[in-house]
Length: 362
Image (cartoon, rainbow, N blue to C red; front, side):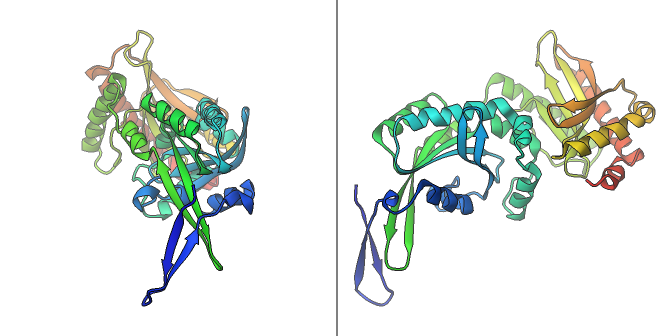
């Protein structure tokens, strides 16, 4: 449907009427793609309220097993956004397409996407430079975002079927929404007005009540974080999350200490405490774990733990960790987790691991 934009020069009563135009008549889909890739704020979260969240491009024309994804974004809150663009009018098939991409992204996870040469640390650094990034924007937070991505269909006309299907999916908990552009041109300028459809519903989905398991994780991390902050003031400013892991920084990007709960409250459940090497370059993680293995005796002596060294964790990373059988997470298990991570922290300092990593080019 045609719309019009009124334009008036200040101090005059002369109105200029600028009618909307069909973008696809004079532009290709690649024109739209290049424009949004250069300026993600045009479709960033919060654009409807006039306060777009700082957003960076993780990947453009990303080759997945199910096809080529137009754009993959990361915003300052650690949310991953899957974007499918159409220069003209959408068809109902676009919904199936973006769901296919989402399933593939979720299956790949952080490790698999890293193998596709996505530069996580570079993206985090750019967002941090905005001054508006979440305090705990790190790989752990991003891991969760990848498992719960936002799905965005952007086009100059969203057809009724697409709107209706997206609305149905939101009612079933899928965070999918649309942006429909109005496009105007005059002698000197192009004007783009983004109308967001379904963003409020997606925000409500993001803030919905947590599951019992997520509440259990949050309570465990809250308790352990309070204890570690009391034992070592200044060691971390992290707050509890609903994820099964919790990282503790050690002062260098790409490496950290981590608690992980495997199979919460199940007979074969166990608790992991470890030092993770998650540099974007596999060779650096390999060199770090090899050096750490050479220090096995000292490391086990300081931590008092029976350690396992994993040189190829996932497809790129490495870790050294201890495990504790934990069919239930009680005070005894929490005490072990706290004492173990503090001893790991001591080992990092005593063995000058940060200095060694810097010597290795981290």
